[in-house]
Length: 405
Ligand SMILES: Nc1ncnc2c1ncn2[C@@H]1O[C@H](COP(=O)(O)OP(=O)(O)OP(=O)(O)O)[C@@H](O)[C@H]1O
Ligand SMILES: [Mg+2]
Image 1: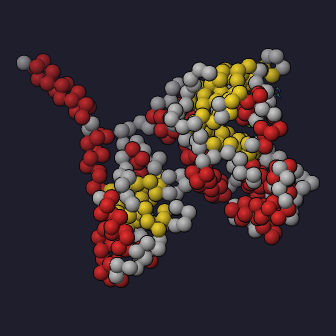
Image 2: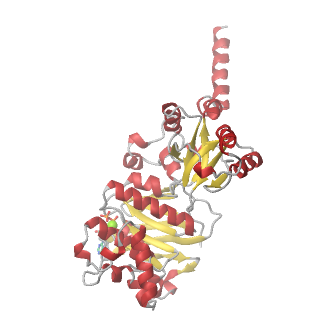
Image 3: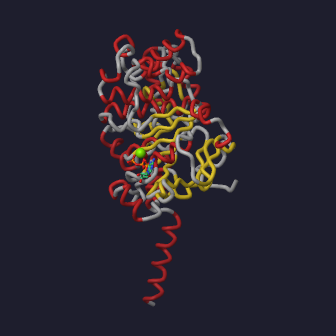
């Protein structure tokens, strides 16, 4: 198999498209020579205008649609050699139009694959309860209902849960959050990001929504009329869209145009020790010394950031309450940015909140670093007046001097 575009190329290949095309009815090209690799634990977004071939691409992976030519490899094996039904059960699939079975209860819908897999009743019931609870719906109320007795957004959540029920390694999600209100969508996006990071699901995710793509994607496949135009990280696509169509699709307001428009991720400090809420102040102080950090981040049981604390505040707390008291009881600084936010947003936030430091979190709200007031001068020199730009500038001045002589 030839090498194809992929993001990191150090991880295991999970889904590889090798020159895959789909032509319907002998003439209508829905997908045109698509090549690319989705690696283990990545969430890759397929995005592009209506009819560009997103759903077809997804359905070729689980063989609801067979490619006209080319090969799809799943875990390095030609997937046309698998039994389609078994293959499908190893992949969670969230259908674009939700597709709940109307004559089954919500509980039965969630565990429909578990049922095929022969799970016993108690295990299915427990799994359904856990899942529905995860999206904030009361199991006692909703598991017995029928899909028509749910709102559109609730149905969509059940569609997602159904795909997760047997804990597949690969998830195919076709506009899974399309019909949700922004708040619920944000919440479910967080849940999915969290899940992906915790259990390393490999996800192919279709959306129309560029914001969603930028938030969720480790990689983005931009499609137009069946062709893959660009497959890159969100940062690269924002910085360097490789044609006019993509630039327009991204929208001018999102494009990285100035040097300060780089993601916080690129300039943050990442030597900050991560502490649990019940760790003692003493443990925190020691961890800071070991890591040579002026801050600790404190996380909850699920690894999500609760807040940060500086060495100075920690010292004050020690004087106040003693070395053994838990860091979670201390007042923590909860100011935060997403690692993909740009530096200017982080600077504004520093100024607005009059803080010396803000936490940087990933899309699952886990701490990944800090952005500090102290690091600003360095960022300014590196990003606004980088060395080679300065050199060019000097050279230009020198040649002016020469010219005038
Ligand atoms: N079963 C089929 N028979 C014939 N043509 C089809 C079939 N399924 C899809 N197509 C065509 O293939 C193209 C790609 O369709 P697809 O459903 O993959 O688009 P999409 O990118 O998912 O669009 P949307 O964003 O509207 O869901 C479209 O032009 C569509 O009309
Ligand atoms: Mg579609």
